[in-house]
Image (cartoon, rainbow, N blue to C red; front, side):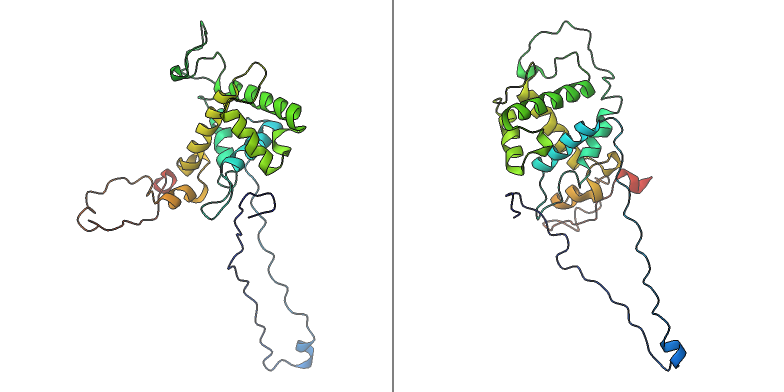
Length: 238
């Protein structure tokens, strides 16, 4: 448990560092005076994946939101470390994010919650507007943009949105939270080829085998037994 109250995984627990053994042997004086060979330079860390549609401010909000909804703990890394922010960015930058196959010609009237999405905005525009409204509300009530809040305040802010208590200007905070949560869940459990569920961490957590979902040949062998298999994604078959 970190100081801010949000559990964090200690990724280095149990990690070891292998040392290099240098054999002195029968080296002569000249050889003995030679400096030891410098250790190989470790490969550079991979570059973070770029965002394709979210602005810097929007990306900061999404990363903070998914990390609040999926904090790092003993079950998985944080939401952004699992690639959920990248998944959301790619979805909003896709044809779906641009409103492909969505009827947006109106008339637009206030509908019931069970009627679903009833707005002229594309999903990309919807999230841009929602993020701006959320940041305006947290600046007004807590003095900072959402991503700059302490972890506990971010939890409280999302809870207020979920409960409909966050007073967004000309925007439905509860509906926005619902869309944000839905995309976050999709990114956490989707096939890794779409950017989220990095290293299949969510599938490993719940024991989902991934793409190969046919078990007719295993029914008898695993009857009343737990079936454990390394999950496979679309990329593993391409």
